[in-house]
Length: 79
Image (cartoon, rainbow, N blue to C red; front, side):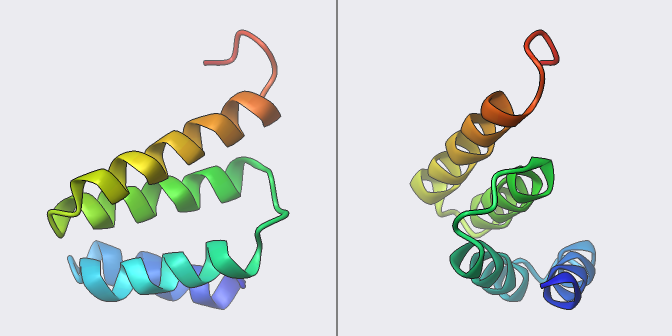
């Protein structure tokens, strides 16, 4: 999990959004019950990758999931 996320981040930083998106998707697919801030960040980064690939609706859906997780896991008033 950690190695996949690290590789995805590296690909993202090098503007390889397609490959990064594939790895981010792999992380969220394999950790569906994880509901913490790291998981929300992964959904956010997946959304950014999708946005750069002109997959606007998929990006919006990923960002909504990231926000939902953050609202569930962070203390009230944090956002």
